Image 1 (tube, one colour):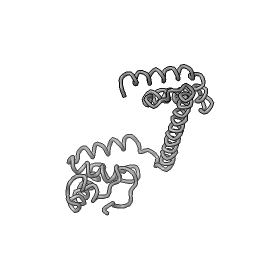
Image 2 (cartoon, one colour):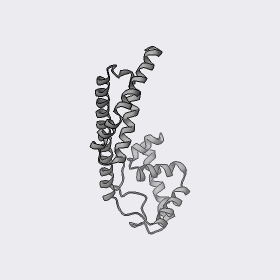
Image 3 (tube, helix red, strand yellow):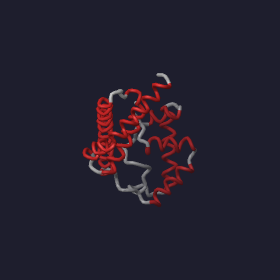
Image 4 (cartoon, helix red, strand yellow):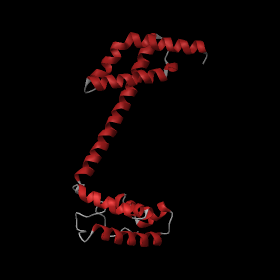
Length: 185
């Protein structure tokens, strides 16, 4: 597209937007739940129209209908995005509902201190398994070690953690989320 035709497309878009500004704003306000959301989607519409301005028809009536088509596509994209955000929020709410209650702060600090006292690779192995939910063979792959080496290092790390945390290893002295006995497979 030549510089002259690019400028002509810019001018057609500007003219069409000025002539249809009130109609386009009403289009979004009538279809959105509140004015703030309508204004946001209107802004997205302006940006989208600008990005594809080279496609605007030359005839005034066709340009107006083109703007409504762009507006409809932007509105549908906005609704899909809102639905995805709502679904993600619902999933998070569901997950949080099933989370166990938070561990006391002093227990968290004790566990972090005990982990810090371990060899960094052993501490990362424990974190990968108990905090991130990996199985021992998966953690071994992440760390680049043999799975049997990971299991023996995990066993030694757990022994050291039990000693560091003292005899009270009941429910308040946990390493992370409650997991099945030992995740080795």
